[in-house]
Image (tube, rainbow, N blue to C red; front, side, top):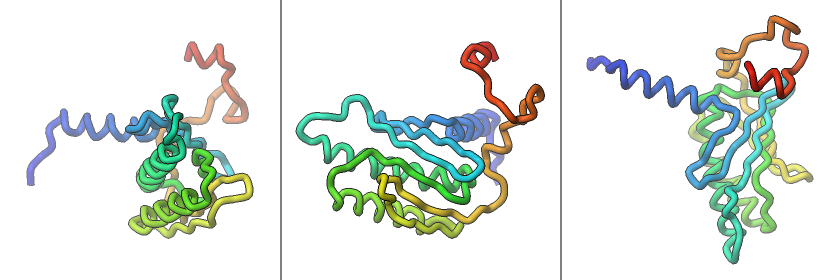
Length: 162
């Protein structure tokens, strides 16, 4: 076997830490914002600032398809489970929404953990469940606040100086 160099190991660790960030940048310039909470995980897909013009709907579909691929990858990497709501960028076309749902289903077929897509809600959120398989990866790097025992939040000022 070939041993990995310290630099290679550092790159893997750096990429893993980057994948665990709350805000994930996509190649298109769009972002995913991932917020786990007690009852579920919510993922918000935000468009790149340049989206507009004649091909806006085509660009939104492309961004949502890119987001679906990345979300499926991050579900496995972060070991997310339970209820997951995804707020894809709003699309006018029902056919485009169907294409995004089918792409998400295709991506999740590769997941060794059981996943079920329940479709889009009346608010336009994609609803899915993924069987819990151990602790969520974020739990490895989060610690309970010693001051409040995990019952509160940091104000913006405290957070800036932390």
